[in-house]
Image (cartoon, rainbow, N blue to C red; front, side, top):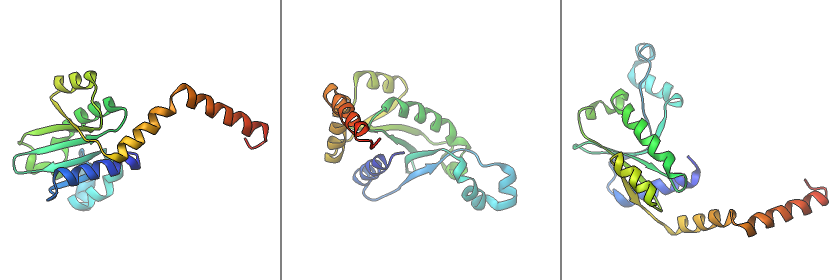
Length: 167
């Protein structure tokens, strides 16, 4: 996850659940039984963390879990990740207390398109639009980057650098 999106999800979680009850960059999936036998569960969880996928955030409650993926751009990627992460819940030892409880899937994004909403509805994923000033500024820069004018300016700059022997 890009640093920008790490701040984005952290800000969202603090605003949505100011009292806490959530985790960020939460690892999911099974731990090899052989590692648990040699290291104990806590040791195996720590040692195997680099090989487990991480979801952006999880909100824990007595009622169930909310699995949250945040995407500023390329939001359709988050849909696939959420479905995969949902399948990993019952193999994640840290989630054992929630194995038989409801799981809600949530995508946090600054903009929703009709196609994204249709897909999310079909897959029972809640889309939560969260827009900050930092996201507006970042998105404007990103969108302008792909305009014809910006592309031409980059090409001109590159040509000047090449002519000057810099590149």
